[in-house]
Length: 377
Ligand SMILES: *Cc1c(COP(=O)(O)O)cnc(C)c1O
Picture 1 (cartoon, protein in one colour):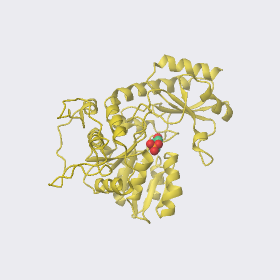
Picture 2 (cartoon, helix red, strand yellow):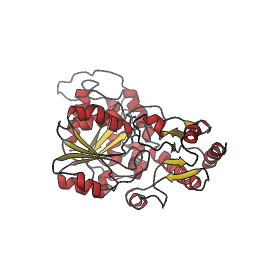
Picture 3 (cartoon, helix red, strand yellow):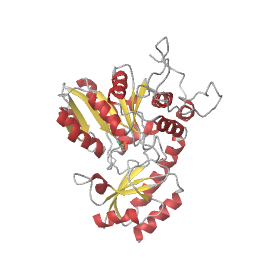
Picture 4 (cartoon, protein in one colour):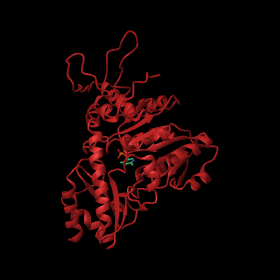
């Protein structure tokens, strides 16, 4: 068991966790260790082989665990690899409940790989506690929740779900990619695991693909996930770990700026005549607003809008903006805009007149001017 450090604020942990000056050189910025293998020690300790562990991966796993307030973390080569590691740690036949509007790539992974492998997957509207009560059985092994969800920004009540799951003896996992530990702390609501696509806000610069799972306590899950790294091998490269650790230092500042921009955009878009509806949990009209206020410390940098002029206009809009780049993904410093149904493909359930926005770190007046011009063009 790890010794608990005195509590520090997230801004401090983001800069210092997992970072010790290099004892050999005194360098403050850590060295990158591309080595695939390490000297075998007589005492059997230390690093052995790059797939099992590496100083850069170890450092970023330490930082993520401390930021989240968990026991430990396991990093993967992508967010979907992190999800795969969780699901493959179960046994065929196990019942799993998953948010019906979880990230489409994870739903596809379940449909095309894990249901055929034998998982008994049930997609449920986790924003509706009654639906969860009906779906959860004593044999349920895992409850996978994404809140706010993607792209409708639905809010699920984490504390209520944790309690229902505990009653059934199920492990709870929150895909916290949209919020990060700065805005939402699932462990404090009773969740067991927190999963990230670190490609998004944690990386924050649109220059790496990665995933992570953080484990709250001594439940056996950390060993299982380390085994998944070792046996399935979807591990991140040392340079990607280095980039991610570097990015974590600015996470609190970035998230604060993106959060403020998204809130201002939501309010402005709500009053624009071309916009049918704004999906943003910070708006009092949002059906999950009260729950979001209770369990979040900010409503995030993501929002979606539907457009009165319909699907064709929604498909065209991303090519009319200049600052908002027409690209999928989210959480980078540059604002992004996308027609979500096109990205999700033929089995998408996203409304065809919906556009998803990821607020970046630009000045809000420039972002609004950009959208104004595009919406009126
Ligand atoms: C992007 C994303 C994922 C998948 O992560 P990758 O890094 O693209 O594999 C999972 N969940 C959410 C909420 C995401 O936005």
